[in-house]
Figure (cartoon, rainbow, N blue to C red):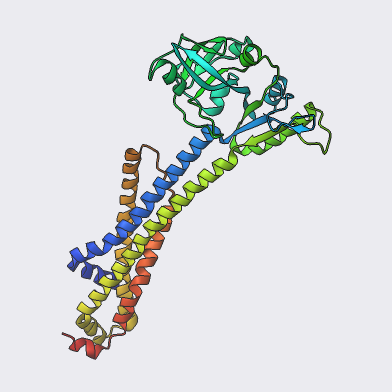
Length: 405
């Protein structure tokens, strides 16, 4: 019952000073709202980055042709000619593999409409768009039948299209010439910028890898196989399975070096995701400072209240109120200020997160543990910062308090 009475007395005291009460709560409102909103924006941004990284190649592995030695001279990675389309077909049978694209890469002078441009010719399989989550600005990508028949067709990167045909022009149906080989343009990729591996995908002409093999370079081998694992968790398993498979197919004896290299991009993805998490934690930490400022505000206002209500405290102690009763009353007032500020701050935080979602254009994500932590911390800060004024009030001498003017 004593707690209820103290709470009622505290509420009446806060009600008499409405403006001061509102201004005191404002620090807590801003602090809680800022923690929730910034955390929601940060988590949403982190998820958006991780989704973008995953769609851009976090599940991707690249098998590169390995080293070859001629006359004692080691020619380095990519020099081996032992990687073949049959290897790619065997890799496709691994259970955790989703997509496979055999590949060859070279540079060539491409000519069309009186213009010419030295660019990268990327021989690829029909599943390359699924591996990279590519979108086309115009036309279509080549099909498995086009690859099987080594059709003379090409999909242009946007930079190549702009250089040869003009910015924004639709070149589908036109012909470009790579060296002496005419290629019919069947599509244009939407602008993608650099790939995770550092290649400028806009400055590239994509051609069926069989066309590069048979019509442009006259070879039977590959210099790479691009693989997409079904999930990011299965990348390591796929890497190990591919390594075992190719060592077996290439008859590499135990202890001998591989004539290929399997590279994955998860380390790059992990670094970017870690940077996003660090930024979120930094911003949340900055927002948490507002909670401390709110606690200081409560302490200052409560100290003023103790001074203003010194005579009231003296009267209460003179008629029998104990020191702990006075302490309890002022602690409850501080708790009420913190609780009310936290409740309003939660609502403001949800509203700010929704507004940020519309303004920034990405999905925000409010984590329940963040809301609970913000509320608990705000209540704790209110009680801790309210304890000193409450203790000061409880230690007032009744005689001195009654004499206070």
